[in-house]
Length: 73
Length: 253
Image (cartoon, one colour):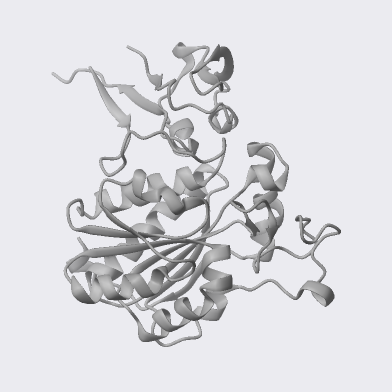
């Protein structure tokens, strides 16, 4: 399961998510989308704590955040 | 097992926004959609878009929208709200729109206590027209029409809308927030929810001023622009609630 999913089509590579991430696991990638922007990506999914700080600061609602929930008995 | 902690609010469309990279208009659009979702308003919302960068706001909200003449959004909203008193009306205006050409409209809508919620984006600059000085431009801030920084002797002093409108009798809720970091983004969302609740309970006029950035015309990176608001903007425009007549908390739940 991916905890942070970026909608590459909408990303403008502004970097606000990269600055907001408390774990510093986001970065601007070398991939370029149809608008010509280098898109953001998560480089270390395992470290992610699903705090959604990135999505909170994202101006273009690019990011969807999921959280692992342990199964209750 | 996993659950979604954050996804696009229901009231936003999938249209890519035309704003520059890092523009905080996008954040505020999303917060409005989240706030309306939280109070359970989806179908009966009418928004008024301004003239300025947010002129195409109607492309991004899944609700009925008007696009008013420059500065006249509060007047259009007055008509909308009086014709459809059961709807939730929000007005979205920038500083060039609200504090300059639309000053008369906003003051009179506020003093009449029109039952609407105004979202006022204050980034201290005219974004769409190329970075000219706005009424809210900070002292010393460089723009294309104040190239050596705004000098009060020459250009006048910045207008503080929240302080000014809170002296009137009509408004129910006047607050100033910022979107320069996660904490303040969440505070802005709460302020918007409270503003919309004021409207739902027919308390009267509510205005939320949101300190924003314009990275393109500040000539800064998006991150540096947020830092500028944090260090300079917040000092000139203190955050806080300027007027609050109070909600009926039981009814608000």
